[in-house]
Image 1 (cartoon, rainbow, N blue to C red):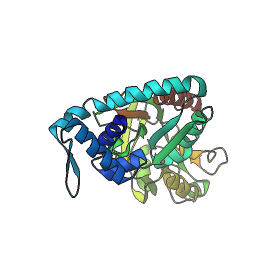
Image 2 (image 1 turned 60 degrees about the horizontal axis):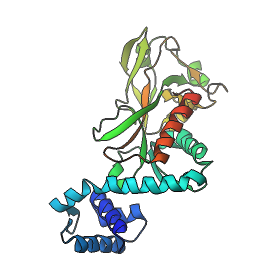
Image 3 (image 1 turned 30 degrees about the vertical axis):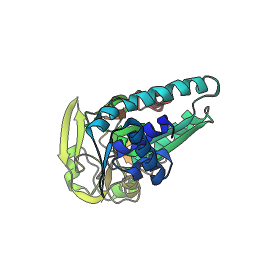
Length: 298
């Protein structure tokens, strides 16, 4: 057994909590992952993990090794990558997490632009609106919308997303145009349940927040579906600007309450604390900052 393989198998197992999770992260079999860890334990003469039928625990010796091994492996990967990337661009795999709609509309194209000059780079994009455990899933970088609440993650603000209140011309032909946020109480509203407080919509008037609880006609967990329902005339939606595309320019939707501003929700990049940030991840973060600035989200 190669010592480095053993350390990688141990770290992946300890962080994911299972040989299955570690095997998926490393791209090898469960049996080989378990074998590498067992051989590392034999070589060191200590037990690093406690095996149970449901989960793998970590011993005191394992905790001591886990406190230093990830940084050692990161430094090794960084050194080898720098040597290789000096002449051929970034290589290896970048595992990226992003919310579903934001990932489908924006992040996939961002990553395509970033990866274009790096033919040796593999992008593994995983889209989910659920909380993603970066350590367990082996995620290098996650894009998140809203305030990051996990203190164990490092973060960098990339930009911000504003929302626009919209309705279709057909809907407005049979309903009065709202003049204030309070007027929304008389309307059918399409609520995106991905928001922290879905049915409470916040606007800004002269810098002061105006918050209203809106009646719910549809509840959906997709900003794109909320937009589509609004285009179909089913009600008023409060949509992030990035999902609107050309709906406003083509007249499929009409902006409402234009005398009011909307608070921006931060877009952040987050990664695990205590790990050396590889050059390709740092480069992606810098690229995302510049790309979002060009797209109007910076």
